[in-house]
Amino acid sequence: MVSIVPLPRRRPAGDRSAAPVKISISAKSVSKTFRLGASEICALDNVDVEVGDGEFVAIVGPSGCGKSTLLRIVAGISRPTTGDVVTNGKTVDKPVTDIGIVFQNPVLLAWRNVLDNVLIQMELRGEAPGKYRERAVALLTAVGLGDFLDRYPRELSGGMRQRAAIIRALIHEPPVLLMDEPFGALDALTREQMRVDLELLWMRTRKTVLFVTHGIDEAVLLADRVVVMSPRPGKIEQIVDVDIPRPRGLDARHHSRFIEITQHITDVFLSRGVLKSESRLSDI
Amino acid sequence: MTDTIVVSPRAARTYQRLLRFGRQLAGFIALFVIWEVGVRVFHVKEYVLPPPSQVFEAAWEHWSSMAQGAWTTTLEIVAGYVLAIVISVPLAVSIAFSRLVEQTVYPVMVFLQIVPKIAVAPLFIIWFGFGFTPKLLLVFLLSFFPIVISSIAGFRSIDPEIMDFVHTTGAGGWKAFLKVRLPHALPDIFTGLKVGAALSATAAVVAEFVASDRGLGYQLLQYNGDLNTQMVFAIIILLSAIGVIVYFVVELLQRIVIPWHVSTTQGTGGIELT
Image 1 (cartoon, each protein chain N blue to C red):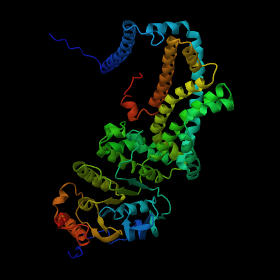
Image 2 (cartoon, rainbow over the protein chains, first blue to last red):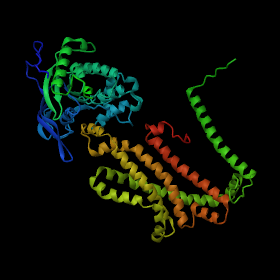
Image 3 (tube, each protein chain N blue to C red):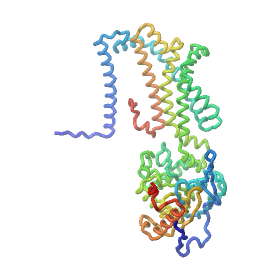
């Protein structure tokens, strides 16, 4: 059994905790129970999360801990069994529209080229896509898709598709970006690059980001705060501040705080039995 | 000494296409040559298997009656097929999106689909007589089910996450349907349309077999009774040609409507259209 000592905070002077921060996302005592035949599965148990305006918060936890469910509840595409969610100052009781959402799969439309896949966001919102064309081209060029505007999704690599999906989630300038394991389907190298690019993109736009992942590294490298969840029922174990200076880029993996914080989160998972230090294979 | 001939990519593509067309044509010519030579060498009786030269000769003699029959049969095929499309796609939409319709209409439809539809043809004679209507209905009946079934599959197979994304845009049901659900279903709808097209030609001929006084199916039975095998072959070839044309019209439509789809861009595996 590993004992969990709260990680000492090392915040720079004059940090945002001094001034009251505008809250972008607030989930209060949110629970979600799925009914599966006769049995009930508790996916989320009394979860409280607040995300400040412009803050990057990652939720990390094993599969089945309800982290994606929480994100879907924040987006209003899933309803909590109990509890309240306020996103962008409005109580959530239907799908929230002033957000951008990115899933593990890019879910682009196969019949539209890259540019039109970004512009569908505006068309579905009843806006003339022509007005946003220039902005879409600029954003796509910024993420390296400038030469692929008229390509169809199946002609692109996984990383390129996901870049297009991220731009689709940004074209309408939402204050909040919700990302559900956005790099989960990518190979390790592409994933690392996407992570670095996302940090830079976020530093330029300073959107509020809620980022769901099962990668401890990824969460610590990206987020201001990491929400650590354990499964069945999905509960918040701890919320960890990440005080590694930005831009973290590729080098942050060697930062002493990165090593400390990832070790700390690993210990939390060890203490909750999510991770085991001895292989289960030894039982055989 | 080697000559290097520089050609534009376009010319190279045209050359490839011509080469392909030439090979396809050569295949058909070879088939007819083997047929002709085989029949003559082995002295096959002409009422069993006439040589192609005689088939074409007979067709040349009777071309005006054949054209009339072809007109009648084509009209039956096109009318029944179009009716099937007009009814089955909206029906598929309502089955895919309304639980009430799904639970009431869909089981009845599945049951009706099991009924051997050709067996219903004689019944249509009792109800609608010898004219155009029973043929139209049988064509409709045969091509209707594959279109409905694949269209439903098309509307249902959409990734739920695409719809989650659509919901976060606040788009209403109608806009979501036109911009996302319908285009997504089109490849499956076209699959159904092609199966339906192939069945509709069969349906028209069978309906004419049962009771008719015109059309290629009727003529086929007449010539068969006279042991005029040359004309039987001529009509079979003409019927095949009509089937191929209907199929290619659908194929062409598919290329225009869903140029982005894999089935369109990766070749059809069959005879090239363009």
